[in-house]
Length: 101
Image 1 (cartoon, rainbow, N blue to C red):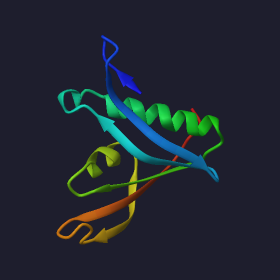
Image 2: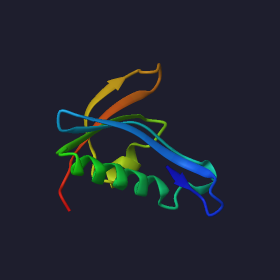
Image 3: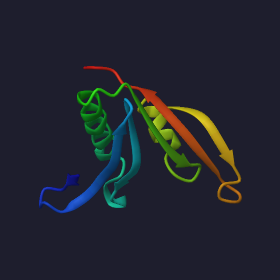
Image 4: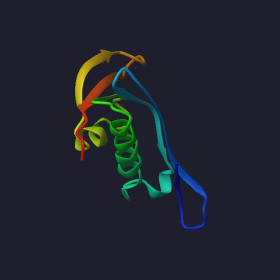
């Protein structure tokens, strides 16, 4: 979770670890504070916890109207694209090799 200086919830990440993979299913950051590094901090924390649990890769998906560029800046690569899902858009499946720090 991400909280502001007053303790209010301003972001969060939901994921699972299984078979050596971190699967990020949800990432949310309040619109008013996007671009300030909170999303990257949540992803970094999740990846570190996944490595601690023995994971070697991470997996997630996003849409063309969401955050593909954000994830690419964090080192994720697109390995599959599902076109016209939803109609007129695309869904991207992305992965990253995790490194022990």
